[in-house]
Amino acid sequence: MKRLTGAMMVGALAVMMAASPARAQYVFLGAGASIPTSDFKTYAKTGFLAQGGVGFDIGDKGLWAEAEGYWGTNKHKAPDDGDKTNIIAGIAALGYSFMADKSVSPYLTGGLGFQSHKFVPETGASETETKLGYTGAAGLGFKVGAKAHLWVEGRFLGSSSSKMLAALGGFTVQLGK
Image (cartoon, rainbow, N blue to C red; front, side, top):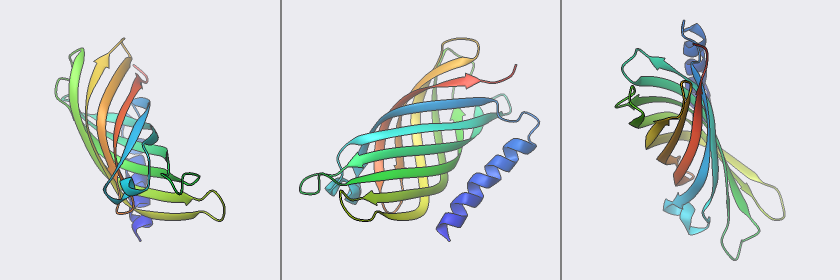
């Protein structure tokens, strides 16, 4: 049921983007470190998290909507140091840029979707669990050209299976105009 809820939320955002006259106005990619928290930190080490997606502005005052995808991996601590956990998530998010027309702009974003926690043992079969996922971030965007931005952010990504803090950096490219 939770997998269906997340898929429906991401699908609804995709439909909104396709139906919008503006369509997808930008694409983004980013990556950084993922730091396990809560129960996840008892067995997982700091790992890697990549992010990508598409989005569009809602009006001209700094509000936006996005479809975000995440992939990450965290190796496990001893005695299970040959094991790892892979995270895959799809999130529908809303964000707000406080000074969208400036060269440096702080922003906040948050969203809901699904998150899969895949345990990959050194030997034996892997196990996957998919649950409701959620995220929130605070960051800074930097204009580096008419259609390009760089960004850095601190992000929380979680579900009931695995929670993490992430330090990410990336770039956004405006499409069209």
